[in-house]
Length: 154
Image (cartoon, rainbow, N blue to C red; front, side, top):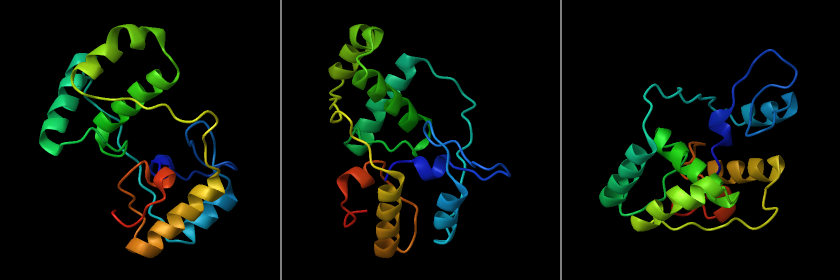
């Protein structure tokens, strides 16, 4: 499941929240609230790390966990890694020339998303409902949940 639920907050405006370039309607919020969905905002990071420090944190994470799969919801390192993937997927010239090779050196691999890949809000909502039925909660641990559709190992 992507991290879009954790980036959502309610306000008193007609369109309610910022959601990766979009807004949630009152109807969509109502659907989430009908599940007793817990609205959680991640705090803004207070410490600024250099790109090289983040790369070292990524290397250390891999040493400790044996994987580079870090959910965006796993703090600022997960968000940083998501941005590196975005640079790769958008063929950012500066990234590809200077930073991409350094990530390859530590064993990180990139994969491109299929062109036009994007689930609708309703499809993601159904994924969330399915996850909740299986696990009894909506604290989705992996940002790739909706893409993978595999609820059994979470």
